[in-house]
Length: 483
Image (cartoon, rainbow, N blue to C red; front, side, top):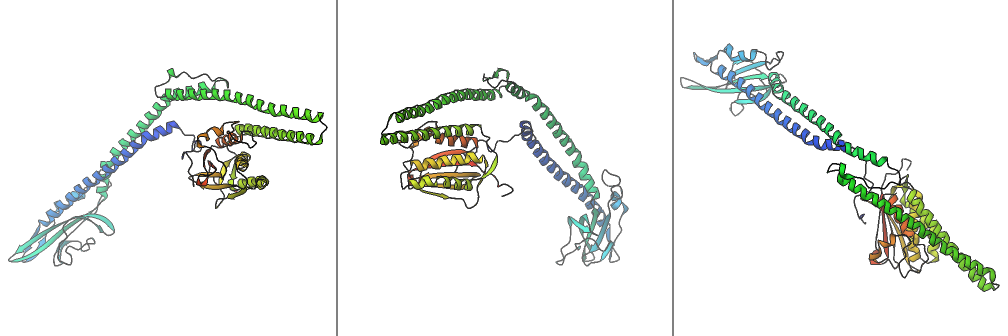
């Protein structure tokens, strides 16, 4: 499978885009990424600070309650001071409506509850190994998440020792309100800054792109025959290369117009020569009485007439290729190839040419002018059949790869020297030593049609370095809805 000489199609991917929108996108993207990253970091910092404040208050309360544990006649007792929970009685966070539920538990390692509620969270005060639950962590009380601070205290009395864990838990409403208070105002300011920056960027781009609009208006107001170059002196430095490139394009258009005029003159000359020969031959036919001679002259006249007809048809096809729209309908290349091979089967049989086709596994669709695509393939196969020696082989390959619909015509004929690959696409070009009749327009027509279809064409030696392989890449498309 061959790849196209240029993986980027010349016109297939050209789309109408807003330059202003693309510039805004490139400028806004880093701003948005920065604000998002900074907001995420600010949120993480706000959560950390709020958690630290929350856990510190819980730990302080747990320490105060733990400090009130004492032995009383051989039994542990605790009196919870009001100050230990007073800090939680006030509204939590910046919103006075935000209040939290606070609960606590004081229990011994033997499972005795000294104070507080019995069902305290999902974790026991001491695990099965006798290890205490100490420190700060997150738990669930009555199905609601809470922060917990646990303090371990070892009590000694007359040679006996007992460990006591004091745990204080609080719901997270106040903590969440504190996070919002720490994070949201800074985020709003950053979003406002991004919005202001984007507005200024839009205004600046609108003002700075006005020279391009003026340049477009200048070009649009010109007459069709006005090919004078643009004056780049009034443009910004960055826009001057655009004007220079456009001036080069205008020069190419002017050169192309000269080439078209020369082509018309050459075509007229090419048409006058067969007509003059035909006129002379017909005059000779009218003056002779010899049947054999008359037959020979008339045969030559018929040959010249056919050559003239071929030339006129090629000229008309070339003109049609230059003026036809680039795209119009979905075309199945395999079907077009079969039709062309059927049309040329008699010519191939007459020369003993093995004319065949290697279709793709499934239909290969392109978007274009069906008539021109058929004419392009007809010229390629016709050239291959005419220039391949008798008993040779011509094969049409249809395939799809790399987003392209691909046609390849291979033969085992004499081929074309690589140094002549570019020249054979010129009009009325025939290589030295060629004896086959032709107009010299076949590959020029093919090249013109391929360009109109937005495709590419390349020549290469045939299989095994014998003959010629002509590959055409056309824009691949989806099959029509009816298909």
